[in-house]
Amino acid sequence: MSSNKHFFGMRKPPAELKHGILRSYPPVLAGKTGKGGTDVVFLDGYAGPGVYEDGEPGSPLLLAKTAAGMSSRRIEGIFVERSPKYFRQLEATLRPYADSMPHRTFQADIGQVVDEILGLSRGKVLFAFLDPFGPAIRMDQIATILNRNGTSSRAWPPTELLLHFSASSVWRDARKAVVQSDQDALGRYDSFLGGTWWQDILADAHQESAGLAALEIGEQYAQMLSDRTGCMAIPMPVYSSLTARYPKYVLVLFTRHEEGIWSFAKVLGPAQRDWFDACQRYKISQTDQRQTKKGQEALFGAEEAYAFDEGAYNRQIDDDCVPIIRDNLRHLLQAGPVRIVDHTLAVYGYTLGFAWDKHVRAAVRKLHELALIDDDGRGKDFYRRTIRLARQS
Image (cartoon, rainbow, N blue to C red; front, side):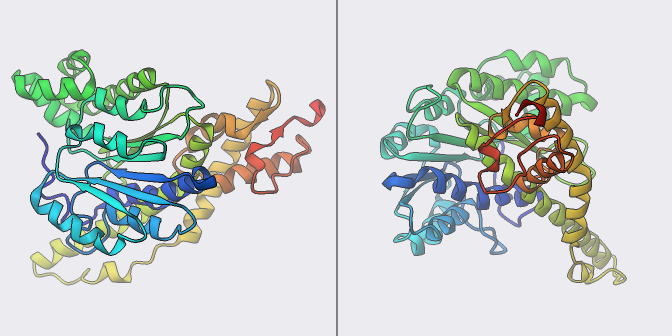
């Protein structure tokens, strides 16, 4: 089984993207669903110590700070961590937030406390973040969390779950288990992936194609969970570097609501921008370390001198993404009037994870400038309005 022994040393680029999502998406969800006095619960099923060794906040602290900044919403926390050492650190990390975010902590595997968690979150909005190291939770347990209110698309209060699917674990550890016929490891992955179906995919994969096989397994896994729960699955691949061939893992949001898809897409682009910056910084820091070990100082301090040109990055995204989104919208409108919120994934297309809502708005304005639609894209709810081609008005 994969270990988190070295994970909390320092935050690497993939964690930057993940935490960018955690900083932005939970408050959007709480803001939209916590109205009218409905309580919101943040669940972190693999919490760790709460902070990295270098002082950077981990997921529990990010969620706690979100709750502290939303005094108009009643937000509670549930945090689960198996390691006794990390659990003690977790409790100390969360102690200052006891008033702004009442919370429960469990020293256990999340699978052991699913029923208790469901009881604590009954009648409340639930945002669950599951960030396991390898095959640490069974598929049926994830389905139980997602199905806590039934499978109706109108189920209230809503349940949303952000899952870390480790592609690197599948192509490394699961493939090794298949090759070596390791029955214990095979059993863990069978429970995690919901059957033995995945074994044939890896058995037929060569070393150089194991990454593609892992992604295929991830896609089928997400689809199986969608079929079992009635949720839509929105994947976000996360790479370890700018040159990585395959994703290290995939973050998958499970939601039943079109607004959830829109809100998730909205935060992915800025989170990806943070990841891009982190990749550059990490590459420079690693080069500095190698040069220092060799007794060379030509690049020493390069990380401190590096400055991310956010303006140039944003301009490139504008130039690349707005025309694609414009054409996607125009294609959709050929079939009749649309509300963008009902077609978020089709509107973004290949720009998902790079563009965000301002680029969708810009695409709408471009169509308006061309006199193809009457809607000018103004207003915060532009994505909810029905848009028609001008000749259909």
